[in-house]
Length: 202
Image 1 (cartoon, rainbow, N blue to C red):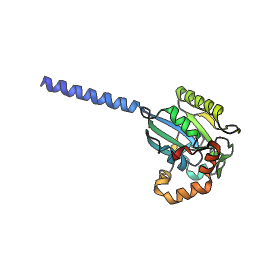
Image 2: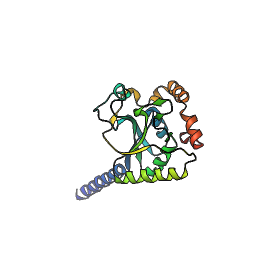
Image 3: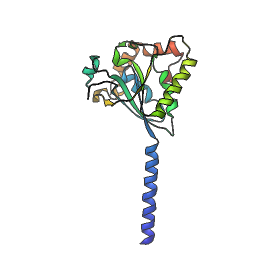
Image 4: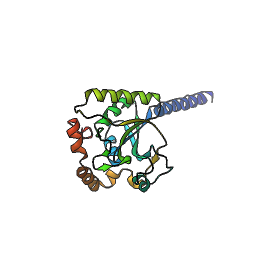
């Protein structure tokens, strides 16, 4: 009986330790890059990203609806919360990837979507994230292949509100409509003109 109890105790300890280590490796990153359907699609392609949720953040209205955010009166950005395993992909790697999925030179929005909800931003949740984002921005400012200034903001994170269910995984649920929207909006063509490549296609 003592041997059995000891074995069970070791098993429980090992399971708890493994589970804790696994959970500790999971982090979240919140960014705004224009249409959240596109941000979700781009980041779910990255190995080590576990989940991406479309939503709203940065504003003053609690539990906003898509219609409210679209009115441009809530202060919210269309954004995405990215959950990732930092033993597979680092925050630094995801931050560097982010820049080549957006047009960071547009102060009015992104591509065919204009207005405050479609501006770009990175929302840091702690001092470590702030430092990583600042370093990534500094690197891009030194190496960018274009002359225009980068206007993407680095902002402290506020409450993130998940968008309505029909927005989640929109690119999977409505692939034809999504591809038509992305192409007609000129997202990839503009990114390629800026950066020389479209990161999400690699």
